[in-house]
Length: 298
Image (cartoon, rainbow, N blue to C red; front, side, top):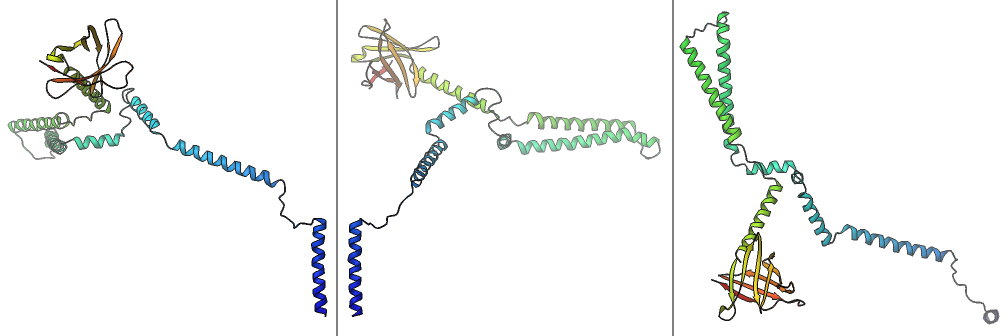
């Protein structure tokens, strides 16, 4: 009975509780955030974004682009060409000395000659010293050595000969066998520029002459050196065209103009195997080269 009463009471309590909840609109408690939490979260997210942007900018600054690297190399090369002595400062002195030693093939022979020269000079000076001191010591009774005038003169001649040979060997070892100085980087660059200029001059000189092409070789153009400038001249459709040639890679280019100064086009030429020259013409406004034209020389 008590159990039944308890069960009934429990059921009524549940109904009362549910009705009270429904009547007073009582809802389960929900977790609430205080107002200061949201601004704090916004500040934190903004700080994270700024940190990411800063890290990205740092990474971009730390890695140079190919253009920046090329500009740096060009700047360094220009700086190297600025003044005497600047090039030598690029290579450490110790490394330059090491390179000079490696290039010095006469070093063992030179050291032997200098060593022999020092031995002869040392012996000659020692004998000369005794030739001067010995008579004084003999006169004081400290030495019992008797020398004739002939032996004294022969000893003097021998000492002079030894000293002369030693001095000659020393001159040979220190002057004649002196290692060649290591060429400076400035000299190397100058030599490279000289070779490049010679190569360009040869490339232009090989185009010199009159070249014939077309039906029965009826057309021709001429390439000549006019006061240090290589010039191209040809008559095209009754228009006399000419230009000054310049080297662009393996080709020779020129901006053709007629007698009135009007632009005809851009021509490029290159010497091929045999006695022939191939050329192309790019007319104004075009982005492609025309058909190749091969001309031969007589």
